[in-house]
Length: 502
Ligand code: ACM
Figure 1: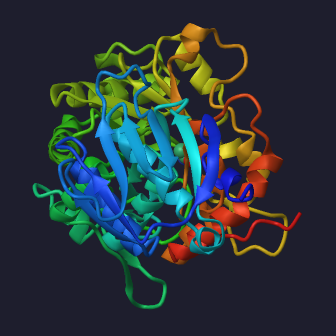
Figure 2 (figure 1 turned 180 degrees about the vertical axis):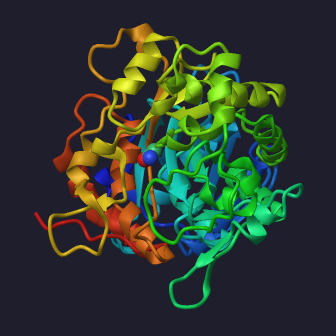
């Protein structure tokens, strides 16, 4: 029995055994209220499909036919956002969320307690009391669909995996040099041309999401209490867009969608107002599709070679009163922040956007270490920590014997050491650290199975650093829970890297 108890990932904050385990019921009656009805339906579906149990949704007045499990949202409770209470006793169970999101997070704990099936069959259901809430609201996972394209069935699997680990944000990296993946009705060539590249074998590689598919993903995510943040890359990493519309580049010459990886010199022209009119239309359509307040516009790895060589861009320096051409990037970002502001949105960018000054209200995603995040917090900005040192799941998982990956190492144990709030911040500053995020750049992930392999089990470790980073957390304890959890992943029919044997 004790083996089952510690196998929850992420680890709950408070966990008490309050009696002997009891036999698995034949059927479960999920007692729902108006506020919990949708989540009750979700739980019923998962109990049937994932745990192989029989379950039905009933109301309070119905005659019991099985184990009664009451799901409620208590908006008067003083629990933290996304917090929940779970009591399981032989006589019945109770799951109370502070919000619907909290109830949903509690449902994930319940599903973990009922799986894997082999454990349940042997041990039964534990009598427990759990009180749980997250340390950080931003528990993010990114996915690059530009380098390789994955259809929405795969995206839904990703969201299911995020949900199972209580992650809260899906950062959808929708445009890249190697592919533009979001339909924009005003500019059809973005996907007709920018969505495809030579596959190096005489054919084409690519694809894109229609706006209807994007809405479907946003809906699917919201049913899992996951926020979707789109990323539309600019001014760099935009070769696919410029292959479709070269008039928004400095040289205005025909360009291809590249099939190789790297940093390219042709970027959006900062000297032309037409560029900003184009981006305004694009971002307007993006804002219609994604209800979330934050829109990520990249800002990383943008060479200025073409700008410095271009009359219009050089003219922009004096016209905008910049003291140095290197401020052009910051000028670009301020104009884009204004466009987003007109749509009621806030700009998120990689930490390069700090160079030359940040737009008001901008949120910084710190990836080149944590210093960018520290600087941004001290300037009063919100920050998401996603440093390469702990959060880059395109890096190798071990020194040897691994499939081709980006040439750097990030083993599971290192992910587990992640601390989103760096030492030395005051508590006021620390409040601006919204949380952390794992990044999944897919240059070397040509198929979905490889994405799962690179993400798991590193995301399991990340989830715990973001949900339950408190005192007493230890890698060996996490590592002991992992084999059971891997059985859950097998039951979900996803690929993962087998943890190293101890
Ligand atoms: C990044 O990894 N270039 C944000």
